[in-house]
Image (tube, one colour):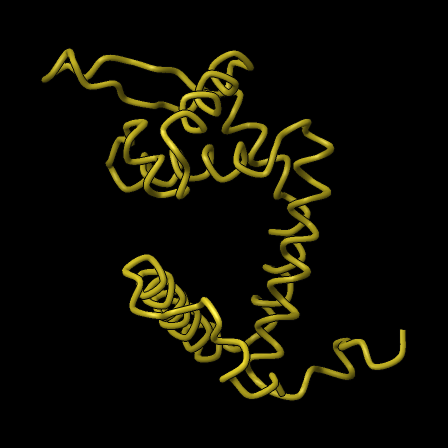
Length: 174
């Protein structure tokens, strides 16, 4: 297609580059999750539980609900579905039998590795072609930009950015 960014013809600026990367990564995830028979929130829920576990934390259904910005009913349906597919386990907390903990099964971890293997391989092939200094710079920049995206989301959640009727007051996107 004419005008589409490629390695030889990158987008104009940093926001366009990030948008192009995000769009392609989301497209990859959509194809991958459909091939695995999972829904969009299924993938995000499993990822959240696995990432929490890697950090030595355990997610509860309430924490998962807040992280995925879902209603309590939608969270229950999501967890029920993933438990039913053998991808999540519910366990009572050892220190408080009233608290339910969510744990990813080995099958969920295997599925996740398979789903994202091609993307990881392609990205790492490129990243490993960079100098160690550029790799470190990329890591720092992505961590900083991820934090910026988190802060922007928090501003939206805190209602400090009014979105109703704002379109008329905002200049067209470049």
